[in-house]
Image 1 (cartoon, rainbow, N blue to C red):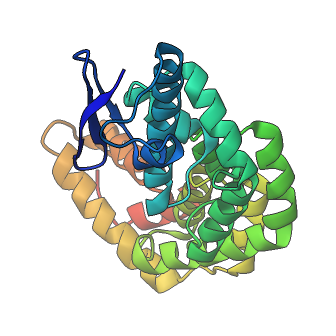
Image 2: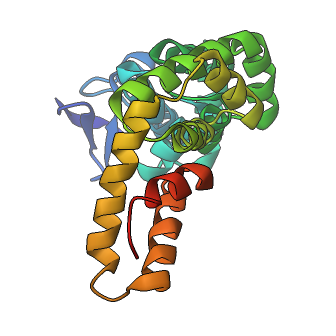
Length: 263
């Protein structure tokens, strides 16, 4: 079969043959098989060209995908599957890209963990979950996590997050609820209860009696307005007590403050 026309498109070359066959190949394919007008190939050679062109196209797609940022092995496989690259070719492409370190799950994992430590936003369990969704194997995550995100680092990051939570979100809560909220937030972000406890203790939080008195007075007034429409007497008092307890005030403080009220 003889090439009758060869035309460069956006990313591929359109190659036409005298027997009305048309194929699309990559530039690598054109160079490898010295494809030019009037060049002739047997059917076996054409099969080989098409095979290599599909592999080359898939490899170029993968490299293009990786060029924007590091990708995991699983992410690249999914990307190639979405672009309808044959699974047999995908396996060959992945092997070659891993050999040349275009894909390196160990380096990706280490970089990902370090970025989260530096940004001081996530605990180890949350990081592990995110890496798992990207297809990183659990054994690899655990190995690199143990080397990178040490217990000391976890305490430092958790303490930093706790300090920000106090200043930005929970500064007006009573001490008991303040600690509960910080603990919940740290655990949600992927820290263990043990690390969360150490971080909270390191803040050396203390109760401000004047502030707590103002807070509870404000909450009492809110509760009275809310429940006073439906309840009175003992029932109203119990509703107010339950509401204040849910907000983190201890019962001694609640009972002391409610002495001033006539139910």
